[in-house]
Image (cartoon, rainbow, N blue to C red; front, side):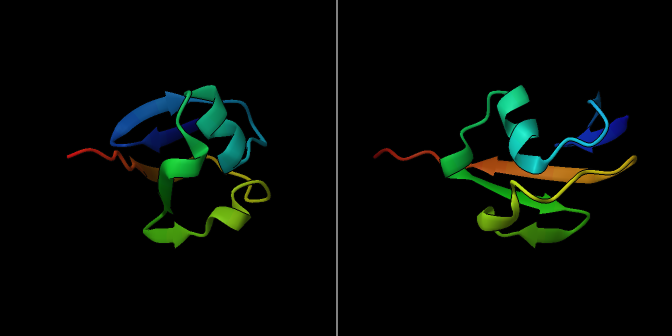
Length: 66
């Protein structure tokens, strides 16, 4: 299925959840904020929210430092 991830077209398996997508692209699940179709998705919903064809995701990973 085709989605857009951080502005880039991507192919991913059908029926994939946000959590599994983050795993697939090796993104830190504990330090990421996810916006799906212009709505911020709470972390507690990442394991149950199933993506659909043409969904648009923006994933921001927080990095500490100083």
